[in-house]
View (cartoon, helix red, strand yellow):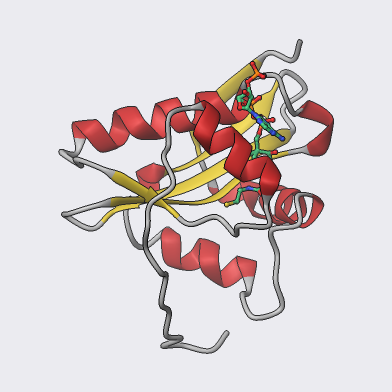
Length: 142
Ligand SMILES: CC(C)(COP(=O)(O)OP(=O)(O)OC[C@H]1O[C@@H](n2cnc3c(N)ncnc32)[C@H](O)[C@@H]1OP(=O)(O)O)[C@@H](O)C(=O)NCCC(=O)NCCS
């Protein structure tokens, strides 16, 4: 079992975190991950966490936020070689604690219906499917 540390994202982590997102299939053509990181560092950077293993490599990430009404979670990722060891659950537990501290009453998470892994994970840790349609509008092209 890997010994892991959950800590805030640091300025030297960018390349490793982007590589992790690639390895976890979280990068898409319409989102520039470096810009996503840059933006996050301007808003509640303390809610952007990484999981580091005992050889100092980054094997997990989570980017959360609180808008004053609801909390959100993005970029939850655990490297394929380190899954099913409770690392994502630890990342979520830490973020939930930080959001509770900030007074956030509820977290909403968006997961593609086809992402059975993530849906299975969230339901296992107590998240319930919600009967909503997600609408989006791009404001800034990357
Ligand atoms: C989803 C993800 C973060 C889970 O990471 P993980 O570290 O393996 O999850 P954990 O080990 O903390 O899982 C906790 C519990 O969730 C459940 N779970 C985890 N993966 C699951 C899966 N593939 N199917 C069903 N349930 C699952 C299990 O009950 C597990 O407990 P157990 O190990 O006692 O069985 C990981 O699979 C991942 O990075 N996927 C790709 C990126 C992604 O899709 N992120 C979400 C974007 S919305």
